[in-house]
Length: 618
Image 1: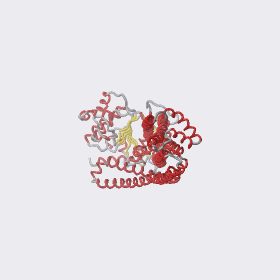
Image 2: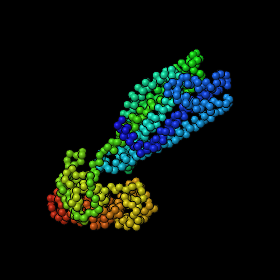
Image 3: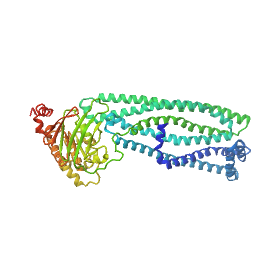
Image 4: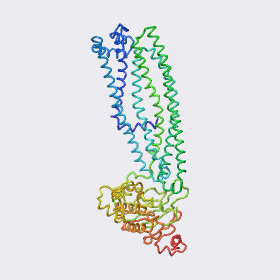
């Protein structure tokens, strides 16, 4: 129940709407009972006219008073004494007319309050879903990069979409069914008791059997629902991977393989849904079947009281049957409440697993605010180890980078180049050692301020399915078009943008699929130029480009690096010849450092070997 109480916390902001929904539920239940109770005077009036009940409608009140006991008697006496002079005055036609009007009013009020209750409850449900989904999405942005390395994208998407929808079912289960249905049961139970407490007691024997069945089914459903949500996450992840990798799928002719893999997942989901449906639905027919058995016995026993003992009137017995059978729908609804709570709790567990993940990368208790970078960046004995790795990716890095200088990082794949620059914006934190910016440990600097100091251009350019203008001005507000255009010109992007159908308003597709690799890279550089950060990180920004694109991108990069502290990772060593300093990493350690010409003089150095491997055929 701990999980369920956490769900209920999301309802607090909507207590006014919830209160209104509960009030309307109460009124609906009372009028629902009143609409059934009015059958007694209606039938008595009709039977009197036919000569069946010679005592007439006046005896209705006396009969009720004689059968009701305790608090119920007092309540009913007050009600009937108040309405007696109004309803039962006049001849039979007038009484019949008044009763019909009351029935219309009762049904009108019942349906009106039912509508209002549904609206306000929907407001609560949808508001809770929105808040839970927003909190989950907001928390995802607080989690470190290591979290996303270990989680499947489809799994996260499924939790924020499908699982949140599953949680929604529990709100109405508690605040609607647990309030309206018990109240409805109480109303009709009161009606039944007022007519015949013996018949009423006899009709309740089915409840213990129902509760036992319901409890057992609920325990099974919670386990199965968790499996169902996980399987939907697997389907979502499979779909995401196939769509994003559709080019490779087609290139390798793996359409049929991917089809079989997807069909296998949907088949498992299909069987699991059928299993859960079978388990969920069994409680309702079992409850109903037991209720029908009791109902048939009640009809037989009640008929004896009418025909033989004559202790109750036919009109009362008919109304009693109405009341008893009106008890069945709310009892059936209550029989499913526990199942729905268990299902939603299983889905909520998966959502709260995200919300309970503590972000490792976060602000210090009293973070330092910065607005500029003035002197240098220092790595002091920095080491880093991934959670799932046994060997350090970085080992004892000591480095000083002055403001305005260009530092190039070189080394074979896996040497630790990208990890090293990822420590600067705190995508990860060092396992040991520290990084200083103008003498301040970056862990003590406000995270938002630290990342505002940096711009990043990577090999895998991240663009969004929006306009060119929106992508260039991403994260910035109220930037005039002139500045966006200037940034695009500096990035050698303006010409090809103007050739597009709508220029800067052209939608570029998901991940910029409507652009070439070089065009995407230049848009990314324009975005960094517009942000105008003092520190730039270029992670293999010219990799995998054709010669013409590389020249244009390199020109844009040179403008981007001007008067900025720049960290450059490059496999193409020709692009870093003019760097102020080059460091060579090998297995997480700095094994060489210096300028391009200095490093070439070391005959046994890694840099010279890498250089000649690239240019020996040129």
